[in-house]
Image 1 (tube, rainbow, N blue to C red):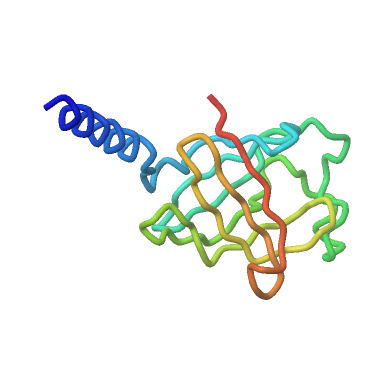
Image 2: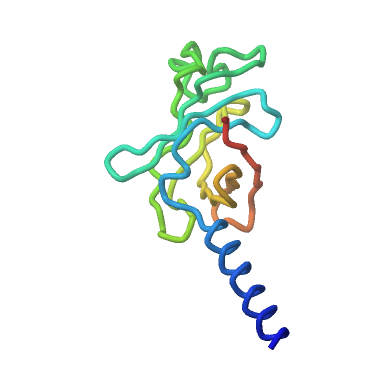
Length: 141
């Protein structure tokens, strides 16, 4: 009898941990810190799509100086929408969006994956996802 009780308790614990690890679509909404914690981006939902704009930065670059469009190089980085047009796939992944990197003025295809409620994997890439870079952002408390 004892082994069956232990097996049942173990199964219940695994089930609870699995439920706790699941993420909700709206868990992505909020303020996220970049990996170096030198900038913060608020991710929000608008018309069933997800966007992210810079709300704080600690670096010396305050303008969009690297933008390939010369007319946009004087705009402030704070308030700049750098994540655009993401759709949710129902499984913790946000697809079909883009990310703008103000450090080099380039826009990349992007997908975002909620690892859990406080970690977000951001993958920017050219062409296919295989050729890209992933960063881990952490949610601001």
